[in-house]
Image (cartoon, chains in turn cyan, blue, green):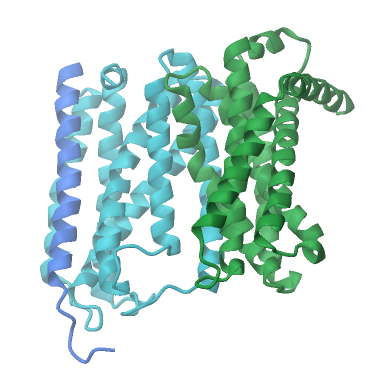
Length: 219
Length: 38
Length: 226
């Protein structure tokens, strides 16, 4: 089985499982009485955020390995992970405000989580733009690696600065966000969703890696 | 704190559809490209 | 270590001498800074919003522009003279090269920020004498943060298409932690809050500087090695 075929299989299975998670979350998981149905957005938003973070983490790791070992496969993997991460970021960035509107009453607030998602998206975008703007593959790989590593190191700082900011300027809360301790049915749904989103990441990255430069030549 | 559950089902539907569309479109996009280059 | 610093100083001197001889960039940067401040001054209504509320934002918008101008100037000079290629032939380590550029950029921006701060206190009647030391400290910390990452990215962006657009686009996320911290600390200082309240932010700024100057020093060679 070629890598592309394997990628298609994994992605296909992950998408089917995603449908399963949808059904479980929408129909078989109890509702949260204080937040209403919108609380269920959590089962999609949080795993998407996890996949986006995973993508960025692996971009960073792969970038470090590339600079150390100079194996172009690490660069190819980093590029794949970045594109996949962008897709998950868009999911995160769109579902976040929709959920936020029900919690805070506004579409946007400079809350730690939302802000981090926004800047994660900008980082991915910058990474892809940089790759698009450099034609020579060796140079492109090195520049991307530098940006990837800087981006990874930046994330904790963004989180810290927004966290510090927010502890002094709390966002208005109309409804309390979900409590840390979830009843078992909700926890199971959440964990299933995390698993499926992780599998989806694997599928997407495999496919994107298999496509490799074939896609980038078009960019 | 409201006594009854807030009526925000529409948001949930919007978010779920939005996520599904993005992921499906991206998956299709990858599938297409993978067939072209392999 | 000493050799690295000495070489860095030589690289910085070359950049600064070039700048000093033409003086166009620094003059236009200073004029632009003054212009920004004047616009803020005319745009506000002192009876509606207290100066102290706006002051930190005005100051930091001005300083951010100064930093971007400084980075762009360095970058234009490279593009025109292909000075970077010449420097790479010199028996100077890559790290010295980075530090040299960093120092030159910092010096340039420092001059513009000094003038900016003076004009600011003049136009807006904001007394800063009693907090001058911590204020200068936070300005130095935040600016170092911008310029450390900016200098690294400038080196990369030169060889890309749409170079002038790429630099701000890539840099934006990296400006956020130092900027947020700087604005917060400046606001607290101007409001007369005790230094202990801004300890957290100052530590964040310092950590950011240490981490990114180190990281940029390590990564810079990768951007210029063939």
